[in-house]
Structures are given as structure tokens and as C-alpha cells.
Image: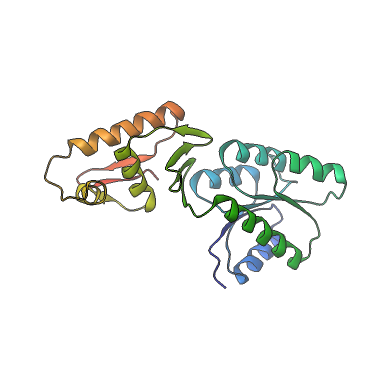
Length: 228
């Protein structure tokens, strides 16, 4: 069963984390494990996930704090996991941004059903448009909208098309010819100033929103790629 939904499991109990990971793999998901709140936030910065399975009782940074920080930077489905069974805990978690809540010890089938339901709602809400994600930078191809966190960034047509190309394959180095053929629909003729200007403008706009992060890398003698 191939689902391809990428799920971040945030659980400090190694055995439970491993068990959950095996369960998700068996049902076609792509699980990534984090064992603390700080590790979860670091993974969120580096990659894109379709859902977060978040334990609330974590060492160091609490699950509630992790939830709050994720919500400040990304609109991603989150299922809270806790041993607390009281209604107040569940209500507070939902008010703070969780999409669902499951109590420990949970039944495997119940967990799978809740994951499927939350993902189904999320996919339906996002419509047919595809969202490309890199670090805290997102690009919605349906609305032609670019954001860093929750802050929208206004781009020109060529800036948008160049960024969309780079984000379509973040680890790939795109040559000047690749960019010209994709964005301008013509072969590279040796004048790379137009590309350099647009890349420079993108960097300036990103730096105004998040000056501590780099998004586009120059690969000297080759071209450009997203900054790893």
C-alpha cells in the first residue's frame, strides 16, 4: 500500500517510537523519528512533513511548546498523544492548534484511522494545488503564493518561476541553461545577468523576512540549487 505521506513521530520512548514507526511503514507511510522536542523542531526546519504525531510528555522542550512553535511556522496536521485522559487536557490541546488527540495506551487500528482521517481532511482542504516546502519556505502552485512561515512574499513572474523550478528538486543543481529553458523557454545565450538579478532579488526579499536563513545556493561554475 503506497501512500507516500511523510509522518514525523515525536516520542521519547524508544520502544514505542520504534513500534509506531514499524506500524506506519507496514501501512505505506514514510515515518521519521524524533526523540525530543528540540530534535523535532530541527527536523521540521530541514524537511517537509504531511503530519506530526506529537507526544506531549517530552524531555526538555514540552510537547505543548513544540506544538506552539510548529503552528507559528507551518500549517501542518498534528495529532497529540498523551497519557492524560481528562477532557480539559484534550480541549486545551485542540484550542492550541492540534487537529486530533489520542490517549496512551492506544490501539494500533485507532491510531491508523485517526491518521487517515486527519490526512484526508488536510488533503481536501488543500485542494488540487501542490505545495512545495523547503525549510520554512513554502510555494503553493495553485495560488502562486510564496511564504516564509506565515508571512507572504510578493514575487515577480520570473522570480516565482525560478523559485518554483529550484524548489521542485531542492538537491539538484540547475544550470543557467536549465533555468533559461524552463523559465524563458529558450536556450541560454551566454548573458546570465538576468538570472543573477532575479536570484539576487529573491535573496533580498527572503532576507527581509528571515535574515538568519539562506535559501538559494550558488554552485560556482555550474548554476544554482536550494541551500542545504
